[in-house]
Image (cartoon, rainbow, N blue to C red):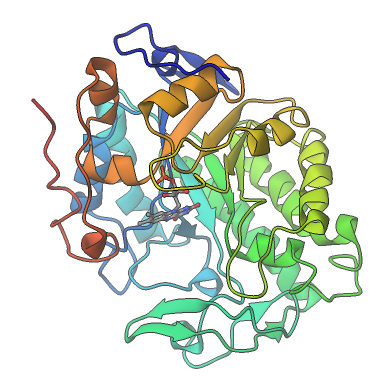
Length: 369
Ligand SMILES: Cc1cc2nc3c(=O)[nH]c(=O)nc-3n(C[C@H](O)[C@H](O)[C@H](O)COP(=O)(O)O)c2cc1C
C-alpha cells in the first residue's frame, strides 16, 4: 500500500470533485455531527448554529447533523427538526451562512425508531420494526436512559414514515440545502429494519434480505422526488457493532453487499460509508472494508472513521474513495481545509462539549495562524 504524505495544494484531498451534480472544490467533507444546540421547545436552528456551520464553509461539502424528519423520529435532546415552518426558517439562516461563504451543505435526515424513549414521546412507547428491545441508550432531558421494548410499527406507520422522509426532503430544499443524505448508519431506524435480530417481521418489510431493505429503498425513492431524482446521498455503516443486537457478522455483511449493489438501481447521488475505524489509536484505517463496497457501487463514495490528512490522501490517491469525511477534526478545526493545505497541526476537541455547552466548544474554536 502506498502512503501519501503531501502537503500543499496538489494533494489528492484538495482536488475538485463532481459528486452527483454538485461540484466540490475539494474532497474534505464535514461528517454529520449531532451537537444538540437547538435548545428551544420548537427544536429550531438559530444564529448560533448558522455561525458554527458558516465557520466550516470551506469544506468541500458539509453534511448537517442528523435532523428529525418528524416528532416520531425524536430520540435525543436538543436536536433540530425539519418538519415545521419555523424549523425551515431556522435552517435558512444556516444554509445562507454557508452559501455566503461559498460553501455547500446537505441535510442529513434522521429517525431513531426504537432507539428512543417514552420521555421523548409524552410517555408513549416508541415504535420500531418489531417488539424487540434494541438494548441501546437514549439521551433524554434527565440524561441517558436505557431503551425499552418498542411497539411494532404498523404498515400504516411505515407508510407515514416514508411520507415523513419525503416531506422532510422537500422542506430541506425549501430551506436552501444543496441536497439531502439519508441517515442510515449506527442504530437508526433504517439499520434497525436491516437488522435480522431487530426485524422479525413477516410482511413485505421483513422476512428476508429483500424485505428488510425495502424501507430504505422506499425512502430513497420518496426523498428523491422533491429533488427531481438528484442530490440524495445514503449513509451506511455495515461494520457497526454495539450492544448485543448490532454485530457485523458475515450474514450482516452479506446483506450489505446486496444492499449496496441494489442502490445502483435507485437515484443515489453518492454513498457515504462509516467504516470500522482504525485497529489501534493513531493507526491508519484499513481500506479493505471500503474496497468491498467500492467495487459494488457505481457512484461516488465518501469514506469515514479515523482518517487524518495522510490516510485520507492515501484513500483518494489509491482510488478507494472519492472523498473523505471528518467528524472530530471538524469539531475542533473550523479551518480544517487550510490546515491540511499547509500541513498545520490539528487542534483536539473537548468531548465534554460535544453534546452540550452552548457556544462553548461549538462556535468558539479558533482558526489557526
Ligand atoms: C459528537 C458526534 C456526533 C455525531 N453525530 C452524528 C450524526 O448526527 N449522524 C451521523 O451519521 N453520524 C454522527 N456521528 C458520527 C460521525 O459522523 C463520524 O462517523 C465519526 O465521528 C467518525 O469520524 P471521525 O473519526 O472523522 O471523527 C457523530 C460523531 C460525533 C463525535
